[in-house]
Image (cartoon, rainbow, N blue to C red; front, side, top):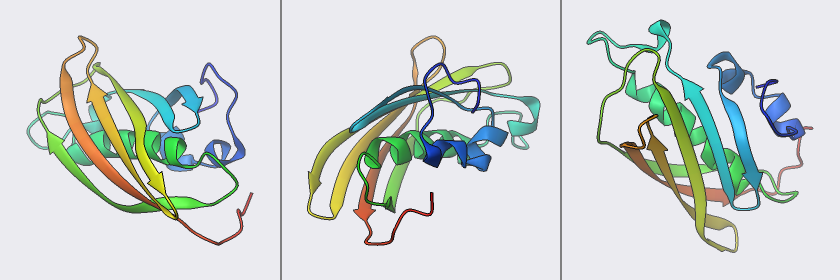
Length: 137
């Protein structure tokens, strides 16, 4: 994630999974994040299309950035994903996460994953939980 066009927070500098997948952070704002990833050959499933778990991983990274907007360590409490379109090698996917509501320790976020043509690849509804654990960073 070192080649992201914006400065990365410590949380993101330590995110080895997202870095290994080649994700780049394009926007990091309170309650909103945009992350992109180019699909590689090693990201394909047995049918030659992008593995759904990797599409979700992109959405989950955007979700994590959007919901960690203060000093509290916030984690996913759950998420529902709907896959709408398949993609393949060379496709640039962009996930945009937006806070819908945050109340007490819980939050609700919508994440949309688009392909390079602007077509919707997946929609995710994420639920967050703010913990009382100190940040390890």
